[in-house]
Image (cartoon, rainbow, N blue to C red; front, side, top):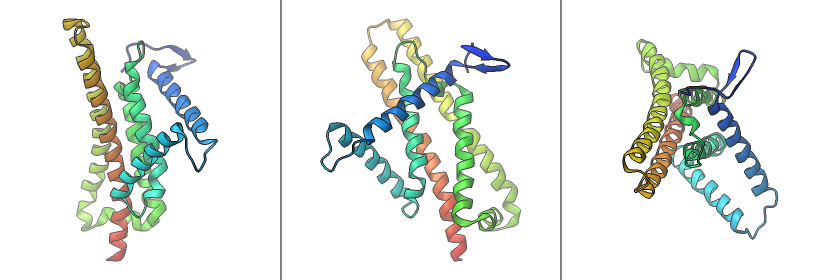
Length: 221
């Protein structure tokens, strides 16, 4: 978490992580608007890159949730792209990744938590969705509830811990070795940032697919 903050509005503290997050969302919004407002049948370089990214994400989602890929695509794609940029933003001098802040990763984990239940209820209905917590036996209800909260906590702490340790390791290496090894450190940071974004997004995708598809299996029995 941040040691300080940028400014306060009354009793509301606006931290550097919040400002960075707003900046990333603004950049992504403008990029999405600019890259899609003039789509053509014969794409240029920018449209080709955008379509390639969307196609790759779509393929990954359909591999896990083939019947509901189009439904959860906007959420998972937005989450993946945001996390990738958020994890890599610390490469810009003077900026720090907002995902090294536990409050940010906790907010993302809570967002995934509510999204899982939202898509499950939307797809199967409230009654059928809640029934899954009582199968195969009502005795397992407390364990199902505990698992919902523990995996949300694990999502938040895993991303926070990995990104915080990554930045600390990079700073320690730079302090010891100076700028003799900037390229290996840079490559390590990029690879680790991409891996952590992929893991978080994939876990969110698996949780969503499980909430939707498990209900379909119960309804077929």
